[in-house]
Image (cartoon, rainbow, N blue to C red; front, side, top):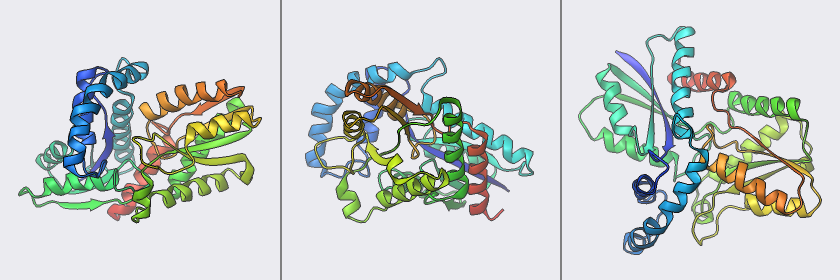
Length: 323
């Protein structure tokens, strides 16, 4: 009987079109973990307003980053799974299966779990590609796993809650920054932008904000950064509620108005480049910083297929599997 590792990422539309975005957003925004409003209040807003107006706008954003191979997030996640499988095979774990799934869209979590069982997996490690735990991301993945587990297959499931402070993850982040600085020089300020969540989630006990701060502090220490040379921010706010602050784009604009000429922005909570990094940060936030008086904006890519990140994934997986 075999062991399997299932990497799980958020998901992506199948095409940069309004119909594809409508299907994707309906599933994503229909998850109670993502939007916890009462359904009687939320459904009319979602189906009567958001899914009418937002898909076309989102499709235009996705079109800016779409590649000949498809969605960047899909491409990077698939490559990470293939590289992890290759690394494990090359280092003695030839019988370990590796696959990937998307929480929203395809390939679906349940479908991939079914395939792993059919391929002989008796023990499956579920590894969400979210270093920091949040109810709207990691917990939602395990909702999907729990729903699948109601089915008959008797499989041992091993779950990873977070790895926000794992030494190999922090080391890979630090190496990516050093590599960028070696090629382009250092900025006046390094901004570490994490995806935001509503503040009320943290007030209710979600550990996400604290884990983001832990990652940022460890990365700053690994880079030996002085306190005034880096800053943590939160991006991708959605809706009218207060989210975790400080917000990324207003912070960048304030830095430019305050005389900061060059910023480098890193997104440590994303392990693969996607809409939120390539369009929101590398395009929108860049334009905002320069329009506010900044002179140079550099986006430091996600870990993507870096060998040190694939090695970190292998180390995280082996630790949880007891290998």
